[in-house]
Amino acid sequence: MPRDPNATKARLLDAAFAEFAAHGIAGARVDRIASAAGANKRLIYAHFGSKDQLFDEVLRRAAEAGAESVPFDADDLPGYAGAVFDHLVARPDLLRLRLWQLLERPAGPGSETECFRRRTAEVADAQARGELSRALAPAELLTMVLAAAQAWFWADEDGRPRSPESLARQRAAVVETARRLTEPRPPEP
Image (tube, rainbow, N blue to C red):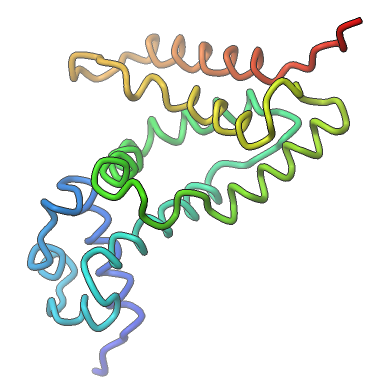
């Protein structure tokens, strides 16, 4: 049976995601990635060039998948913030991967994705229509809404799982924070 290079590449990317989320770039081992994918480690270099380039591709795919998983509506940024929070509750490995990038490759590619640029343009349009606060520039407003959605994940919770009640309170705080950030204000006289 002939080998499918696309299937092998997909398995390598999935294995690399798990490895990088758990160990970061420096701690990730190409041997473990290859073994988890059922592939030869030289295929990693053939498909991606280097471990750093593999990380970049994993991060790019994760950002695209996250963007597709959470519907965006510039006219309802509080709802978007709540949906991002829910997505991160379900996928804490995404934040770990992003944290590793910030720790180990802060100047690496992918700091502003095409998706972020599109969403920033939608926020600018909503601001121009008067639907959103103009107190912050569009990119700053979107960044603050995303930061609010992620804030509880950086807070110290003693490593214990959050209760459904705690998650509900945290989500409500995220949505309310985003509402206050985005609520249009009447012009000052």
